[in-house]
Length: 263
Image (tube, rainbow, N blue to C red; front, side):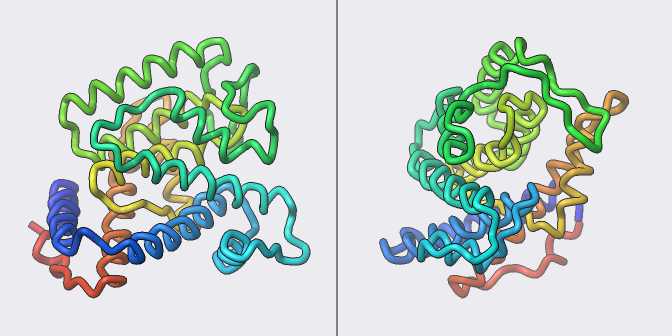
């Protein structure tokens, strides 16, 4: 399926989903709980967290930890869920303007149980990422790069870039800068979903089974020679399609067969 066709399918499905809105308060509550657990599980699992989906649900909804589970993994789940709640609380602002303070607060909520002093603070040392030739910028450059990054987000918003492309760019660029000592990927995925929800799209979860594709797509965007954002943007778009299909399944919405978009 060509990328333009994928975007058209996403927009058409968004329009179908919008036909059943507004949801009832109870439907909204249950849907947010569904995504709160799901996104917390997948985002943490991409980074090596050992909690299963069921264990994540039990921890977040019942406050019960599983015997033998590393406490760090529990802290990550609880912190991510709290950051998710904040993300949802600001995502419905029609005049949303992303700021450095928002990004720092997302990180602080996620990371404060792990290292309260570093939570929400830009790194002060060089970080080295294993498994790639990409080297993040020096710590001294991070504040300036983050300001430029926020300016670029506002420029893209004004340019009316498609929200899928816009959200994928925000994710990729934040990971490139790597502003925090740890937790950059999870913060980037929360930022991406903040944009998607604000624009009326579904929350994107990247399942652990797609981890190799996810990492490979990011590496292609970061390589020194012939970098390309296409694989990463297409990955995010395909994950949005799957999320929309899941929403339609939950609310019994009939969707068009994929072949209608294969031209």
